[in-house]
Length: 144
Image (cartoon, rainbow, N blue to C red):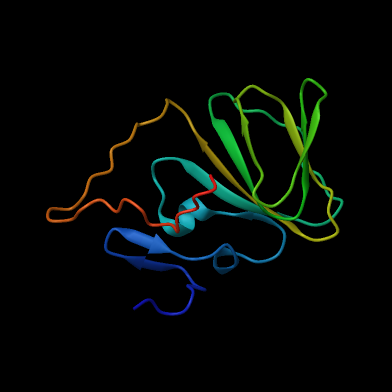
């Protein structure tokens, strides 16, 4: 049986769990990669106060994907376009694309950035010996 939610970083044999709040406080970067020992890609969370925007930037090699956890963010890209994303919103940005992010909500915004290069590994999940694939883990909705 699982214990209460992990409010600190816990490292086990082949895994680590935690929360954004457990790896830092205040505004700015939360180094998820360092805290959880991630080695295959870059991953950070950023906490941004209302009305604050990041500087414009781009990357030499690393494509990034942004996930909005809390708040509402406006993304401005090098072509002059802007897009607003709320909780659950996602954006993929090519390395050389200039981008800037602004918290357009009345609360702190929290977003997670995953960055990497050299492509997708592909589906490589396997079942442990003796296990069977779960075929219907969610309640079935016949109206879909």
